[in-house]
Length: 334
Image (cartoon, rainbow, N blue to C red; front, side, top):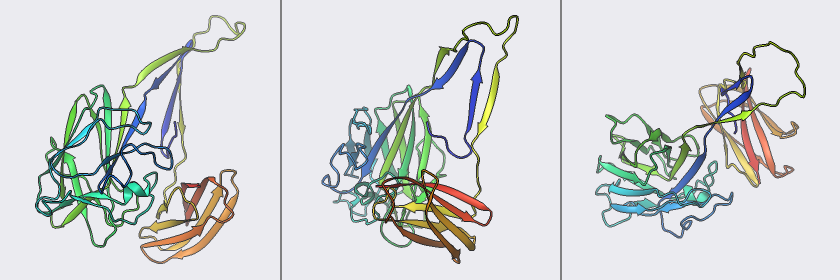
């Protein structure tokens, strides 16, 4: 398991046994929009993940028995109860397919170049996700992008929630984390999502539905290793707990890297109110600095482009230092 910044790992050691809580995770990826020719159903992407395609935004069951990223059937399906585009294009499929965003994180261009769109002519867009396993916990991520200008904000909530509290602007979205996350759904066989354009705007978009399923944690107990001979007698062993903290840093600029994975070149985007000196370092897994750029940030958003000449395929780190603060991002070069 990989740990993130601010993760706290609790390790409990007892006299005779070691108990570990474990849970199995699976992932279901759904490419929303455009024609089936843009990534066939359950087609593998270049990283080996299998995808599903939802190519129709009209009312009806539009996805059945979705496969997970390992190509296993899950039983999950999606029914459009009320289409998202209202009366904007009743004879159409409610999709677009001409984005030029490219890869975003581990979403390939075949997933980011299309979407199902919402329109302000309706406020009652509604999708039903069925075939859930009540014994699992489902975490939903709705991510969208659109190659255009202005603002296009979609709002999504569970139908049982009183109000919309999450939204995402899809215009030129290259931020893997700029999404709507609805987590912790468990104990049910279906869930219904209400979806609409933010009041006062005209369009919104959904390009990817990224679902992570988690089995209920199961306790696994194993006997601890015993010494070859007694070390001491009449000693009562006490349980001990040790906290291991992963060091955290607080950046004053928000940094993003795209495309990631990268082939011939990549960009480092810097956002935030901070203006001043910024140092960018590209660091190999060995710790060697392979590229470095020092600059003056003089606007709220800017991007720096690097080519991958001289960089062997593999994992790298992008260090963004602004003043006394720093941030580390992972980069994969193909």
